[in-house]
Amino acid sequence: MAIKQQNKETLKNYIKLHDGIEIDTATCLDVQIKRLHEYKQQLLNALCILELYFEIKEGKLQDFYPTTFLFGAKAAP
Image 1 (cartoon, rainbow, N blue to C red):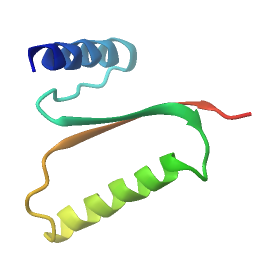
Image 2 (image 1 turned 90 degrees about the horizontal axis):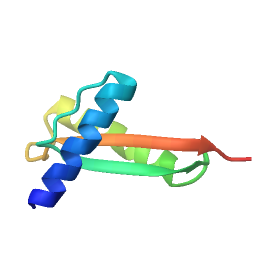
Image 3 (image 1 turned 30 degrees about the horizontal axis):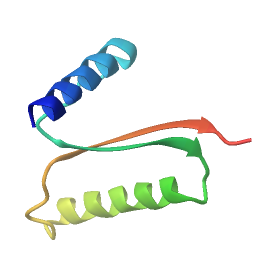
Image 4 (image 1 turned 120 degrees about the vertical axis):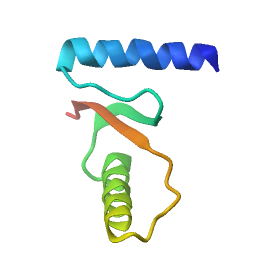
């Protein structure tokens, strides 16, 4: 667990340095980095995030563990 937390801190520092965005390392990290295809897993993951957002906003989802979603992609040919 200590190594996992150290890796989260390293990623947090990298993102802060390169993108200026502060992330909370106490959250679960959901990271997806691969070629970007609009019809593949990235779209399904984005739709899942939207569904989670709407359920939390409407009060239907009470026991959701805080999660940080990170996407990184290179355009497919």
